[in-house]
View (cartoon, rainbow, N blue to C red):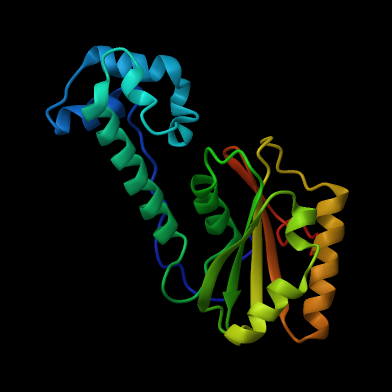
Length: 215
């Protein structure tokens, strides 16, 4: 395992309940129990895939759901999304490639468009800022590398980590991924800003350029 200098600040928690139990508990806790609604939601969203992307008022049209349960589910999804976002910005020093990868698997779950996150760090790996720099292909994300490096200079960052997802689920980097990563690494190096890692997330897996010896 490739470790960054610094201590681990929190642990990843995993859910052991089934999808049916989770949806049932959610509705039951609000006094909106409905086996029909649970089955309807799971039928239209197997393994809950795509549920977070469901358009407003789409759920209420499902058999047994209705407006009240639709609002409850949407609120729960928004709550979970915000909690996961905050979880990716721990206080203190950054953690290992493994822990970052595991957290980002949850962060990118259900995202169908390629996105890129950048963590800007100081010399002690303290996170100064986390920013979503783009949505689209990695080439589009990093065509103008000056955007990322200029932001690093503004923040006074000494290091940075880039992370992006592969909606296809395949974490193996393409030749384009490797080429773009090397270009921004070299550009940063000339400016005295170190690219610490590039983490690629796909499905329930991740790949660290640092761990794989690609950086």
